[in-house]
Length: 296
Image (cartoon, rainbow, N blue to C red; front, side, top):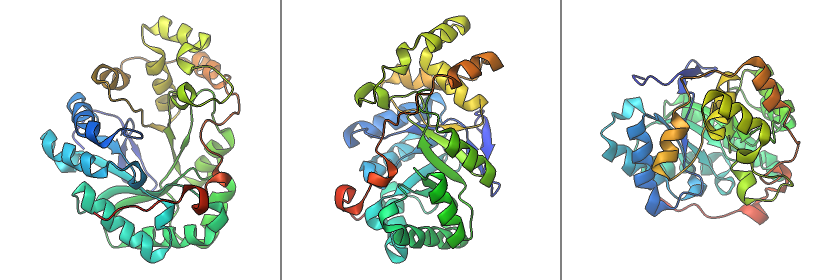
């Protein structure tokens, strides 16, 4: 990596840019321009997923950007409909084909799928094979709770490099953070500035309007979003904010020139409500969330 973004070393030695750019809910027709804007600002980690329906556009943006492929860390996710050993091996082919890459830097399972954890285990074993074959540089999981991590560890060999979960000031998931840390798994925060609280009712108001966060932002002459991203980075997490607005894409990247105090970090920690914004992991089943992932 030649970028100046700080990196986090995964448990297999691969370096991950600490701040990434996410494309969840970004329409395909807006994805190319948004990812190009992010890469031009300086992002070098792009997070997508088969279920987002925009992997092809992410790949096109990377090709158009003029940034060497070796400098861009590409992360994507296998959807539950493609769980199972052979299906997950084919899911790699579909994602790599759409992205237009031979190697995926980080491939993770999108959900734990507790109702069919046998398929989850087989899917992860396929990731282990892809890793051994050099088709991916690192493997991991997303939305796994401590019991899911324990069950996975009992049945597989490679410890996940990453667990991507909902983490923001209103929902810290301290038990997940502790389980990840104990296992040597990097916690990666989706909805890192609490964006999910803006459009889904979780019983609280927007993190951007929180008095504590606004006050800290004023102290540092930064925005609330920048303060929240800095909070993640200083606590050793990977964060993947999303936006399609160029000035917000740039704003979210401008978080490396200030530092929060221990008191400020603790004040943000104390905002945790314990209320999840996304779906309960147990509610994600093939019956309710299954969908066909198109071929490349």
